[in-house]
Amino acid sequence: EAGAGVDADAYRIRLLELGDLSRGFCDLLAQLSPSEPLTEDSFRSRFAELAALGADHLVLVAEDAGTGRIVAAGAVLVERKFIRRCGTVGHVEDVVVDAAARGRGLGERVVRRLVDHARARGCYKVILNCTPELRGFYAKCGFVEKNVQMGLYF
Image (tube, rainbow, N blue to C red):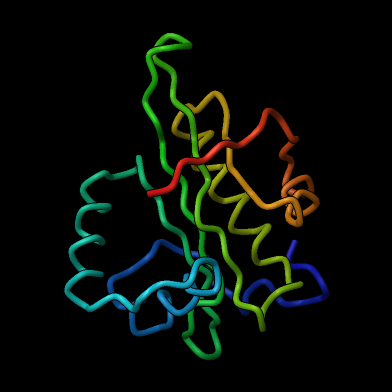
């Protein structure tokens, strides 16, 4: 599962922690979507908001055991619906692997853990949006292309 002969123990997948700000978490997210750096106060505030959501918002990171740096991350949000007898849907978001750590199976390991979490929470499906270039990656993770993504940005 680690891919490319990489020792799975070299990377620990775990929940996001407050200390991950100093371990490169926001720098990693900037590889997904460039943005202004967060202040420590902003990070702590958002961390507390997400923690208050409990298991309905899970952020996982992959930590390089040798350096302590965060080299991959992803999140899953559990949406509570009225349809499907008040069912729940998992939304996978913000999956990113550090450019220098790609090809080691980290993204797949993170996505599988996110999907497992959604399944354990009783979600009847897990969905995500991705760029056309990532279709193959998500297909490898078990996703199938369905429908069309639309967006309205502000």
